[in-house]
Figure 1 (cartoon, each protein chain N blue to C red):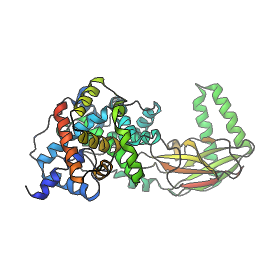
Figure 2 (figure 1 turned 90 degrees about the horizontal axis):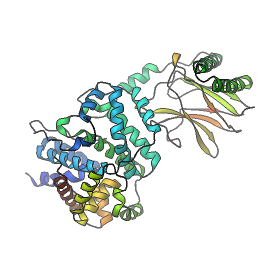
Figure 3 (figure 1 turned 90 degrees about the vertical axis):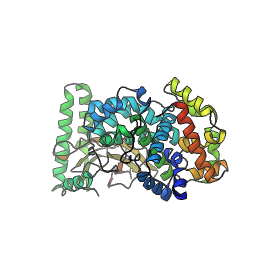
Figure 4 (figure 1 turned 180 degrees about the vertical axis):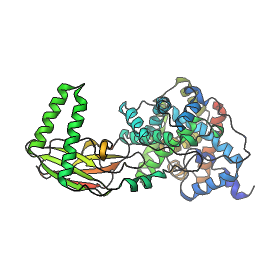
Length: 200
Length: 249
């Protein structure tokens, strides 16, 4: 699997922004976990298990598979806590990146997918569905508001890629637009959301 | 900036939502190592993507917590640095733990019986009634039972005491290596119509022997199998059994 990218030498550290608002000092807890502190790991579990399980459920749908993936992710956090570097991003983004990749890896290994399945999914991502299971009302509002500021194509591309675990060529296939268009719409859309949400 | 690297730079978004695969993913990751502005952009977009993920939070089943914490207790942590998630200790550990089979079936059966009694005695303090009940079950199985034993493909051995009268079996293992990557051993009753899970095998106790596990409702022609599964186990076996025993009652 892929890890979050490493920063280049000489690069300015990026501020984690408001990312740690969900818990007390996740980076500090991860540093303790890296030293084998089980109590700290319990605290990390309690703070992040719902987010990790939630994204797995969102992408995979199947509860049993999501449980497996969520457990794998939490164990990854235990095992590789020493690799977390707060100068390269927030703790929550580090964990969510691992979680999303694990979920997506599972999807891709499972279905050498039929085009038919992909067509069905377009209906599934529209509307309120994305926000049905929400942790923090404030975050939900902010994400919803910012998602609302995107063009339809930007929003659909991002949702299909992130929540359905589609590759960008698959997204292009489902939406019936050119590869290059999807590539740029995902990037434009995410940049607009980043600026809208005040991340980094 | 060359045309090609400009093209690659446009992939930051797709990368941040894990929509790249294969060669393109590899190429982009290589590019990231020498493109500071791309790295910075990817970071910000990953932070953004994480917010999308956090809106889906949902409580996992409560049993998961203990499973994960227990698995963590058995999982070696990685040192800092080095790029990839890889447990380098795994192969060495497996090799070290791989031992020859116990000398005789009787020795294994004896070990199993001793573990049964030891486990039950530990419980006695708090759960006398339950223990007496369990003791009765175990005694009944042991009394009328016959023994099946086999080595596994990963090393060590499995012994089952099978009671035709009760249609039950008590299963213990000896000297099986701890599975790598926080995986677990899962025990199945396998019949012509499919497999049903008996449960996860406990970790090795003293002398490399696991606490006994009871399998019930056995039918003629059933077999007992053990597979290596992800932490927490699975609903159906996902790997080839490392051992199969006849559970013929």
